[in-house]
Length: 326
Image (tube, rainbow, N blue to C red; front, top):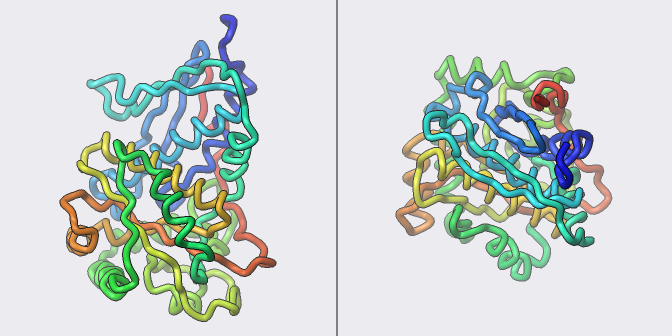
């Protein structure tokens, strides 16, 4: 191994932490190949939930979230990650190649950001109003690289329209047998290596308190978070200036950045993507954001009771299934 090359153990640890990135239905549609200290990131199309994600946009967003998590994890381990996106024009499933350089300094802030990867959860229960939002909002907006995406925080007056677009999406898909079969496939009442276990889902009574959410066929345990009788989350839309694969990858990187910033600030979060899976929902959100950009997904921000246990971590595929050393 050449001097200054990231070692196998460290790289494995970095990838394992990066794999905590959120993905559509927790499908984890990524594959990484390590060789001579370099890492190549590939999309695994066969893992894509095709009925929900016809264009493959959301699984590329998922891989973008992993890519940003990877940079954060590497920085905490003492390595800077240099990313080349889509290095092979003849293979667009080869999303990125990452080279590593030793960093001169690892700060407490860098380590805290990596710790936020483990603390972050997609929380599908109702949220209280985010405490200190006027201070936190600029921090979240600044966390998004404008070259990658734009975060639009919606006013409370837009909430009824977002709720209606969420309901519209559910109505459109009520009799979509392929979509509903797919939801059953990716949700399960038992522990697996991917998908969404039932304790990560909202119970039937909790769904009524969260009006902007995907409806899953299974229900989680009842009686959680009674202190929050109604969802008062802040809703934001993450949009991009294009809708191609490069834009989707950048959107995922921006998603990771803002979720980790929110976690550091003590906020609960939940990405919401079902509305943007149909054109009518995207059109409504585009009108609400007042621009020509393409809405990619929503994020709910809020606070939860201080003494409440965090939601359980969703399962992840074994490292050997996602990382190959050559």
